[in-house]
Image (cartoon, rainbow, N blue to C red):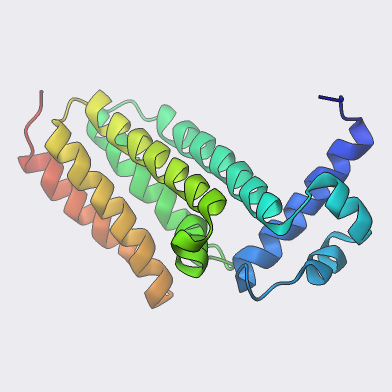
Length: 191
């Protein structure tokens, strides 16, 4: 594989920033490549050199967002010493995310809702994210000493709060789910 130059990496980053902005704000199908070009301020020819098709760009934007989100959550909870509070910190992270002015819900669920099983490449990326995200959340709970049943219930509270916050255009589901998690952790079995 040919090595990329710093200039190509910069253009790639510029393009992915623009793609994330317009795809997350408006959806995949509502945005054409000319709009991506305008947002990225790059020639269409260069965009297709970097990503041969729209699906490639969508997958790259999702993958980059996945990497950033996973690292951010890990970092957010890493400094919390008390195991129970480490689990609850996941919901504090969500609360901050839900308060962002451009919050539109889960990018992977949004893309899956648009394209569903009709696009195998994009669906595979969504499934990869969902498996890895579940492993991250349940891993944090399990490492804090709780049973797999509690870990799975906390994961479902996390996912439910994201979906609810998107539909209700409200940040309150993070706090409400946190309260539910507190009850689970107080009554949940530890290993």
